[in-house]
Length: 336
Image (cartoon, rainbow, N blue to C red; front, side, top):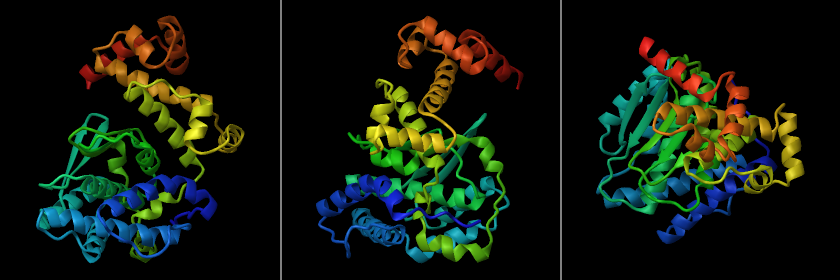
């Protein structure tokens, strides 16, 4: 399964916020990276690896231990290719990291019903902005590896990027293409647990091409990546208690003229309204399952002017009223 590499024109808008963030951290740490800012996927892969490795060495020195070497990362990736499915692959990753503790951090997988949480603890004693960014790129690397092993880019429900409060989450939203929360204790990925049963489909013949750009191959941004970013922006607004963004605001955030943005979505067979409504439906279900919010409060969270409008929209999305859906969900939980 070959990876689709994006064109230079498609790549740059998605990467620019992350490049800027890395350059800021490098400058603050007094670190210089060779070469000009990257403009192609290959240039970015090489620049990104050098930048992150230099930041990793800087962060690791504060903890008095060396970071993982590129060779150790390669051996880790080759090791997990022997897994039958992604659940076993995560187990092998956890075992491998435990052997290199504390240099490789600690991996924990928790499954609760239909949801799975992949958690990374870097085991750092010293905290800094640079160390946090390195840990986020580590979390991203594990995601990229698991998706490559399974041959599919499965959807993330939520990404937590550690204790550092960040004013601008856009670089990370574009990186993970999922709702992102900062300021908690965890570095974690939440996703549907069913993906853990995905078989490992990669062969040794595919490894060299993958590892040459690892962990940058996630930036092979196919058309559906735009839809994922729209869904992530809408979902993140609900989770963070912000107003639900409209088409013009999302287009501006994704650095596209509204007309171009609309056409790009149409070419993928969808529309902004479809994506927005789908995201709101998922968030409505999530809030209903919490059980501590009234329908009126949920309607307000989702940007509806009144509960009646929300009830009609929910019935259109899910086929039943919010209270009926909530009662059925509770019954399913009790039954199973």
